[in-house]
Amino acid sequence: MAPHEQDTLLGTSLSRRFSRLPLWLSHPANIGGFYGLLIALALLLPYAYGNKNNEVWGVEWIYHTSLLVVACAVTGFLSLMLISFSKRHPMAPPRYLLYPMPFLGLALLSIDRTELMAIPSVVIWLLLLLPGPVYVHLSWAPRWRLLCMVEDGNDPFEGLETKEDSTPEAEVMAGSDTELLEVVDAFESE
Image (cartoon, rainbow, N blue to C red; front, side, top):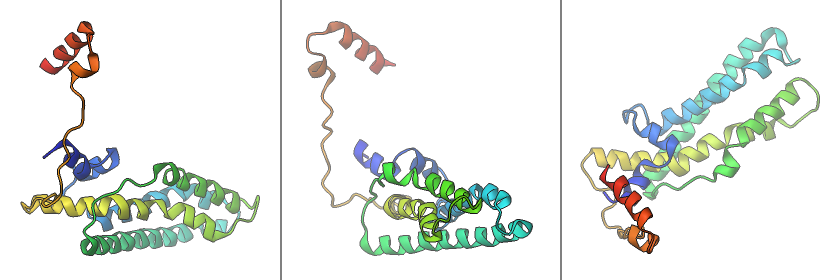
């Protein structure tokens, strides 16, 4: 495969970790459920030390954990169904928006649970839950479909134009700098 096809197939660091797992384990529903579990683990402290229902916080946490895991797994499964119809390739999710959202949601939940300020629950849960399903829908579900195609022996990039490698040659970039060319040659020989 061409380098850009490998990048499309494997993605960035998080997707590369998931792509190392067996396909049955890295199913988008499982990845979505795993995100729900991670969010539930982050909710332990706000639930345990919040002023609301402090006597039964464990039961409430277990209930919400099961809802989070099932809801995120179902959205992962729905994403896979949509991707199987649309056949689109993976897209990079907007990281600058998605990555801080769970932290902001956790901070707002902590403020709400300690009753410092009343914050609408919809805002908190939207900030907590949105990044996982968006990542699964935009990036992982299409990538998983492509990985399944590769495992079945099909070419996921069949019929698509192949991009030429537009990386400039070392000689063009270095110009007349012989020391830089020697370093590049030494690096390439290793």
